[in-house]
Length: 305
Image (cartoon, rainbow, N blue to C red):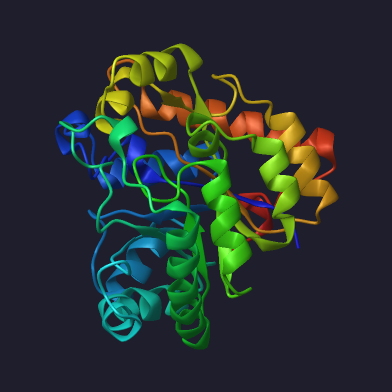
């Protein structure tokens, strides 16, 4: 099976900062993504809610559903309560053959609060993460039983941000908990991108190619800015426009036999980073690094997944 390249519509339709992207529509996002060559999109809030309506909407744009965000509250919920909260999304994603739900703990995250510095995120410590991982494993088993995969997204401003926290979570959880490996969030969080990918290669199920601008990240850290302020300032960008060596990442994916989705997720201010132009840059960069790594990429003209 070949690599498929997808994109999050967040550059056109930012759910956390809707005023930032008010001039764009979801239709435009999907039309432009499809025109560039992307095979799939992650779910956005402005897409139809119902499963069949969503299926028709994606079919209209000739795109697959390649995952989507799931806001977790497992720290404050028991497993049964959390399962009841997310089972509708799980059923929809299974029905639409999505590769996973992109799950991240949001009960105490600061990522959506523009007034709280990202440096002041919550921390559980090693034992706290281990306890959380045990609950997450039980939830992931239910997700698997319902026909899809829980892929955990380490995220800035949350309890799983730093490299060591990713390590603790993966080590203490069962194989049903897979990793949504996000290059940009890992580096922003101070982690070693390649070492972490090597360490957890067997658990990586979904990959976000996200680049960062180091100067902006340093300013955010040094001047105690929030995650949303970091987004507005341009901390994130697409592959080919930042500092991450995506050729090395692609080489590692080839070596580990990865055959899933590579998804561009790079939210920024469209006034300074026009979404279509940057989405094209990211797509072309991925094609180039995959070709050099020997990773086969399924193109749109070869048919839908």
